[in-house]
Length: 258
Length: 314
Image 1: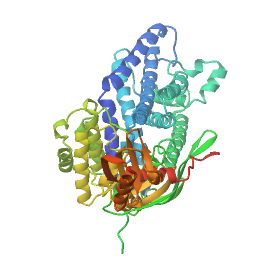
Image 2: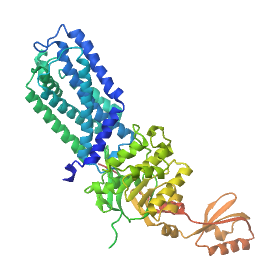
Image 3: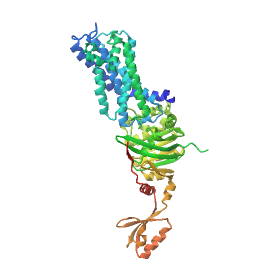
Image 4: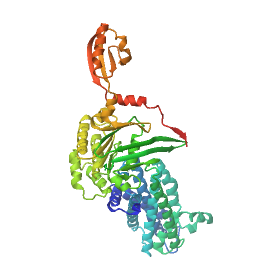
């Protein structure tokens, strides 16, 4: 079972390189998404503040902040592993990490942990800036941490799968625009699903992104559309399935070693 | 007890599945490359050279057969196999985010070597990269990028080094420098495997050569033996008068001014000249030469069964 041992420094080097990769261009990978998050907050918060009360006793702007933070975490976690991998594939420098004696698990771990790092850095950035706009309570910090970690891990794994499958930038863009974007927008970032018609409420419950946002939000307000335990189970099951798929792809050398 | 071979391929086949049909890139290749050899892998485009190297390096999986590097199976013992192997890829690839030194440190780290700076500095010095150590990879010329690729292949001091077309598009000066360096590595005990389109390079550098065509090894021998296989001498002449009919059968090339004949050996030169003299034609110019690897290559490629890359419905 040699492949299951995280053999120290090769893995650490790849993780460090992946983190450095986005950090070196942090204006684009961290500052830009923070600005996007703030713009959403300004526009939607301003327009809807007076009309919507999603949770009892919570202002719309306050309700929106955790959703935007989580949306930024998820989108950036996905963007990190997927864009790093596709860039390396297209420029051909992926060969530098395929030639060394790194196991599939180390390869997987390095890309996913770097995605988590980028997701969390952007998430903290959005949170810090949006705090200026509304006071926010933190009722259950552990839930916040658990969902931020699990959510960014899941999106990092999905990004890895998208990066493995895609051969071109436009294929990756299709993943982003037709799967990740709709799933995030329809996850309850901007509204509580209880305000939806019954049909769309039911549909939302098949969207794993809904559970990530809802569970994350529970940490702030101690109220949510479903129990955070249910959300956690859904997210962990999705994470396990996605991890199994991407590890199987790596194990078979699908597209990467062919 | 013989030494473990540097590289051993046994009955390696590779089929690429494409839509509706499969393409056979390798069709049962077996090779044994001993430690300390300077081995040439030659063949026309599409012969399967790069596919074979990819399988040796673990960049692709063989459909059938096994490959070992220093006795380590490239699939089962991939860690040991990859630690034993340095590969200089054909494409001029680089990571635009990093400097030369960073690139080499990362490469070293991927191999599990963390305090390797002394060796990295030495490799850079040997490849004349020290002056560019902190330059971003993007800013380097093509030749410099090529040197970094060579340096990357050496960071973990592999006993076996594979160079896939390392001199394609490289200027003469760099080529000379590169070969001097690779020869030194070979003298110091590294096994070198080289693919190249420049046959004179292979002839000059390699002690043994395998020729690939359509995914099969069609010749595998010492360079000397391959050249001896065409033990012929060729003689090129500018004649004043018609070529005697008796020599017609030996013609391999004929232009308006010159005619080139193939002879069984140097001893036949005398009789050719005598035949010309007897026929009353004088020789204004004469050039005698040996067959080179290019002749051998051309002859072998023409002789091997014209078997196109197999296409079958999947």
